[in-house]
Amino acid sequence: MITEIVCVGTELLLGDIVNTNAQFLAQQLARLGITVHYQTVVGDNAQRIKAALDVAFSRADMVIMTGGLGPTKDDMTKEMLAQYFSKELVFDQKAFADIAARMKKYGVTEISQSNMKQAYFPAGAIILYNENGTAPGCVVEGEGKIAALLPGPPREMEPLFMKYLAPYLSQHTDKGFFSVQIRLQNIGESAAADKVSHLLDLCNPTVAPYAKPGGVLLRITAAAADQSQAMSIMVPVIEEIKSILGEHIAEIIMPI
Image (tube, rainbow, N blue to C red; front, side, top):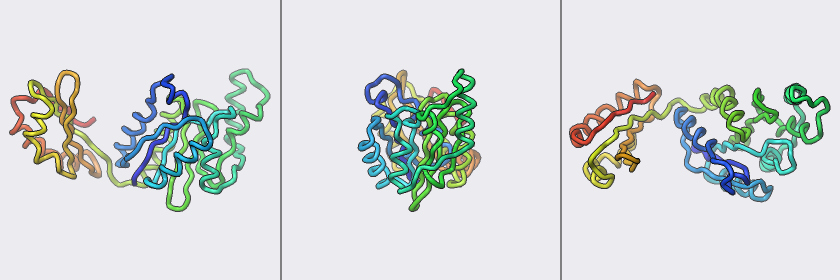
């Protein structure tokens, strides 16, 4: 399942905040065996969000979006997604009750129209109830495509992903990605790559060199049903790397 991560927020484009959501999602999706081919950041603008969806769905089976689910006028991710899938927005009573209860904790007893709009979702959506904020997420399916919407604040997005979206996504994959990292010393990236060049064309596992502060990193990654199977795929390659670059190996970091 080819996936694109789309993070919505003008503050990201301005550099006001660091986009940690994309990093978190990419790491978690890899563990689920879901391939991320693209990442996009788009501002809080209806036409540009719509354009980003057009591009994303032209090249991906699933789009996971963060941001733009708040109560203000420039929070329009759900609205644009509903338009994309030609679905009307419908009211969800549980989402509204959750929002009202949370607002009451903040000392607000009357829910504004702005907050109420957070309880509307594209018709037929799977709602991901937010226990850490007032912006629930949702999953929308249609025409062989999947879109998942998550709130922007990491303290809301991350637990919601782990509790609700990850179990949903696990139904769509039968494998995960597992990596072993080999940290090298006293050798440059190009020299290391030349020595193991015949391994860089492998498909499963893959081998990729990276220049890092303090040395070079070789990452060996296998797609497999579980870690045990992944290790059986990676061990022969790891052993070959050890035989070629053994004198330069400082550390081998196994998958967690």
